[in-house]
Length: 259
Image (cartoon, rainbow, N blue to C red; front, side, top):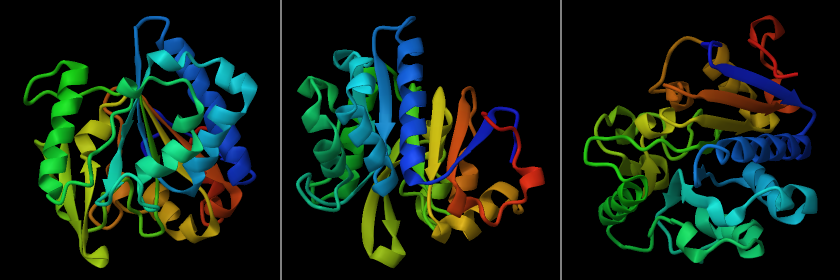
């Protein structure tokens, strides 16, 4: 791991991770909005960020520190399902947080994955991103923050091992065919993630230990472990790891700690 602009924070469990990530995010929002009008974040799916979302909406102290009308929500990836589907990343974030906070509907930029044509949904999302960031074709948006997790196979967002999206150099969003699910996933591409001001990587559970060790300490194998491709270009990346996920890591090679 290149530790120059990456740091690790190890916590006891997933609950502690949600708290630590929430506090970090609230601080980053506050600092960022001192010099800009709005804050943009790309959300992720999964059980670990759900805890984070519930805290942001349900903890009165954290919730009160966020000027919700100035925060715009995007998604790093989405399943090819309608927004009310149980597998939808949007649905999870809406139930856990967005339905419980005073955010204007115009600030919610979901991927319209109910479109039968996944490529069309990806193209529509690109247009929404370009409008918001006021960028032209060929330019890369700079999110204030992107949230990411990692699967036990080393995938992140919907960038799966060996999938077509890994080699994408030009497009911002792609409909990525995932062979093991026999379905499309709509995902931001590596260049977009790497252009963010802050990347928060949340990894929890002993089932992630082997992949995490490979990603952080193993040889460079980004087609096999796509999470290795996430390398911030300008900003910084914070890894939030719980103890079960770190059981295979060499303590002498973890890099700098936040605390």
